[in-house]
Image (cartoon, rainbow, N blue to C red; front, side):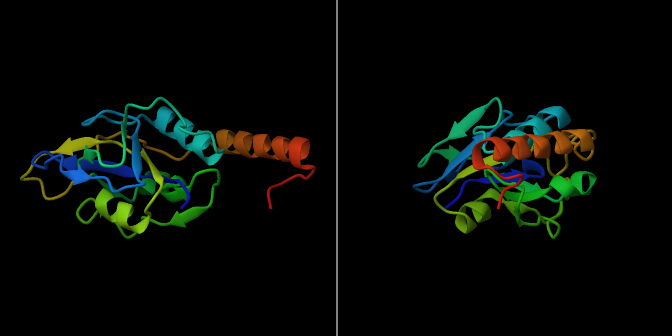
Length: 175
């Protein structure tokens, strides 16, 4: 299985236990500590690096290896950065799955992602903020990963890929 990127809003409930055991063959990489917010600047830099196949993509805050325990974090669709929100394959800008059906009130759980994408490394390019009941839904701090990737960064990424292809593959774009 290919390694994947989760690019979305993310968090967990304060009353959750750290009881999600990673199955054999699965690893999760986090870029902020539990309770932390991933900045817009860091999120886009990590995402761009991972799309270019540069793993781990940025400064890793925590790695959970097979057999290790983590919280069953949740992620959900972020309309503020819709063009970059979803589940992606590392080394590609191809979206494997949309998160548009997932909301703060009905998010996608990490346990479901692990079952759907076994035997791979999951790069959690999301916040790990903590919401406290009795809130009815998970929330992210205003300003967390707030807007679309700057167009010039996307253009620069594509130009770098084209240069690589011209130099090493003798063609102007990837197949």
